[in-house]
Image 1: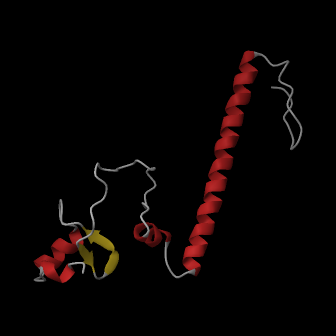
Image 2: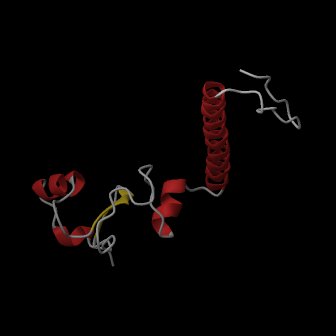
Image 3: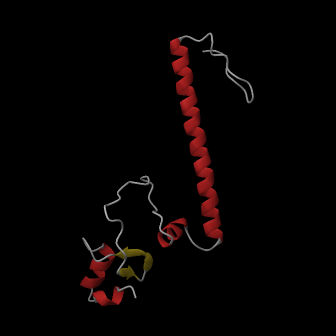
Length: 124
């Protein structure tokens, strides 16, 4: 492959054959991906630090202000109609909620089996 560029210097690609150009593209794509990952990690670390300094977590902030604490992407796992409002909350872990639809979460079913009543977990 032709010479590599240092910061501020251009790479002369005029003498490269097709395979060298493809290899350069692969190297550039890989470097772009690495820098994007570094940048995103830096942003996440800063957000995490700010949340911790405020006495909360990123997940709690996302839950409270409408975001999703998922790493599956913006459309990952999203159902039509959006998320349903929580009707029941785990008093031991307020981040765990249930809308009353679908299968009961384990924390709720085990509490009900131990004699507690569903109304005890209702969100006011």
